[in-house]
Amino acid sequence: MQIPLPADDPDDTAQSANARARAASRTTWVSVGINLVLSGVQIAVGVFAKSQGLVADGIHSLSDLVADGAVLLASHHSQKDADHDHPYGHQRFETAASLILGLLLLVVGLGMLWSAFQKLQAPETVSLVHAAALWVAAGALVAKELLFRYMLGVAKQVRSSMLVANAWHARSDAASSLVVGIGIVGNLAGYPILDPIAALIVGLMVAKMGWSFGWSAMNDLMDLAADDEEVAAIRSTLEQTPGVSGVHEVRTRKMGDMIVVDAHLEVDASMTVEAGHAIAVLARQRVMQRHRVLNLMTHVDPWKRPDLD
Figure 1 (cartoon, one colour):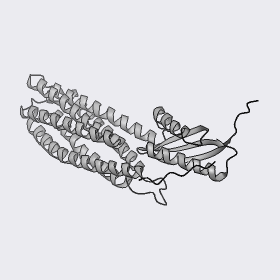
Figure 2: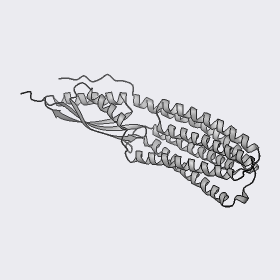
Figure 3: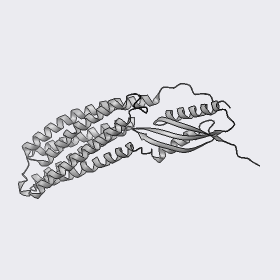
Figure 4: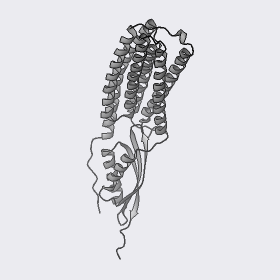
């Protein structure tokens, strides 16, 4: 039995990697511009208006500039081709960037918690804030929510976990601005302690999100398998390949936003080695064209038709 090799097709994997890189660059530069303006305004007005919550939110926005730098760096390196030292490519630069984002959020969140606790231990030191702080907090809330929706839409379009992480980082900023705004309203209403309480809540939100992203990235670096639904889809593609009689020992591991797969393919034992190899090549190409698979390593096992006697 002869299995024809499929005709050469464009490298969908390379195209998707390039699309993610372009999307990362575009959305990150938008984020840089917005956060640069917001951080400067929030910190300056927060100091003038004596609002700890607004200053904390400004520092949070400032940390985004560092996060954006990590995303740009990872995006640049992750699209590099495989080389002698990195035979599977550089996709895990994206995972490393997600880990950095998580650690950055965790550190910023813990710093906010410490500062808020200091104020809560000495409530008499909490000052009444100026009304200007409320207008800045409201403007920051709108800007960050719009940035989140834009970034998440692009991230889903190109299926990039790194961009999803950065988008939710922007959403955490929007949520923090909302909490800060509520704290400022309470302060203006005659309850000054609400401003540091708002800063405390923001710190908890940021630290929790940082832990979540960091833990997820750490699991990916430890060769976390793809989710069950994606593994089942890959298995189905292999089973439907002409010439494949059975599939077993399908193993996956994350490589950035891509997946590396190992699988055993069962083919007719009476086939020649050349025919079995052709089936394996066909299976590999079908999987890489249909799924987010960077590489498929196949092992061909002989399969004998069951005796009907």
